[in-house]
Image 1 (cartoon, rainbow, N blue to C red):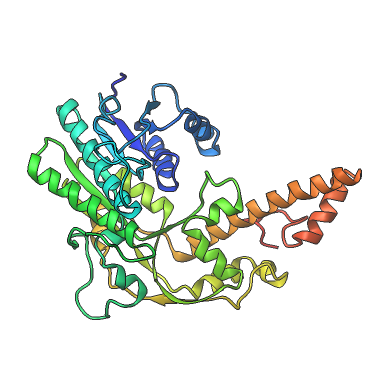
Image 2: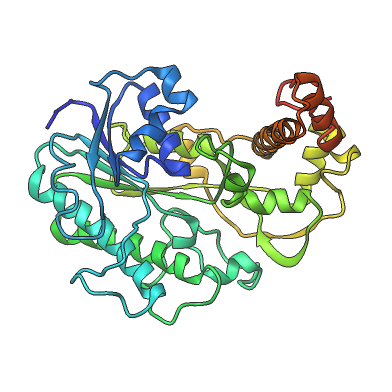
Length: 393
């Protein structure tokens, strides 16, 4: 297996965060070996505009097949020769550590999160202890803040949560909704840090704790795919949905998340610590920002100011991240504009396809006819050239 003095093993490269980390790492001059589940992932990654623009050579971008991250030895081959590991992936396995079916799907989610993290650490420790210098792990704010706080049930007093805050290991049954997801994040963070304390490996661990992550999702091919992730709540609000359930008013841009992972590899940054990525925002400001950037979208009724979403404030201290990593977080306006512009682009692309199909079915195909149908279906974007962020007329 190829060895490179600045080679990263990256998991989750086909995910929202993992892909942007891949791009950022290549830009920074690292070579990257992506742990993938199938050859289809290679096609997906290589077809993206960002990777095509970077034109990585065969000495800069590698592949390692890891069909199931949550089984013993899953990473044994993938870790050989690497200097760094960035673990962004969420496990996808339908078996537990003994190979039998889990008794509870919630317990499976927690168990596989622990297994994938610990087997990765074990592979690095067993097969590559002299080369691996650092493992950077994508965690979440949900790993250090009780679930109740995100719904406004945690109280407003007390010290701010910081990168050293921790929660006890969860046990079933878990709360409904995102409870199992939060439990898996808590369990994976606690288990990884416990493993490092117990085995004292020659490498160290850095955990990244982002808030809700927003931004352009290059791997989202449709508007529906974009809104399946964290951007869905934002778009629903802009389309007029009313939600009385409060949601935490903390966010971070995807570009900042990717940069933090790569900056954390720097040898000047001490290991065995964590970094919070979070800024405050108010959900209602989403409408103000979008209306200022895309007024015609509201004029045509595609977006509405009638949507409501209550915000919950949680005291979070991310100053250590800015101080140690030198990372100044993107503004809420920048992030909202990025998400909305991509949603409009993807929505327009779908309508272009639909209009072309209609025109062909009617035997009236021409660019002019398609433009007319597009204008009647999505007048805000038809016939206009995108400005700074697209679709501003």
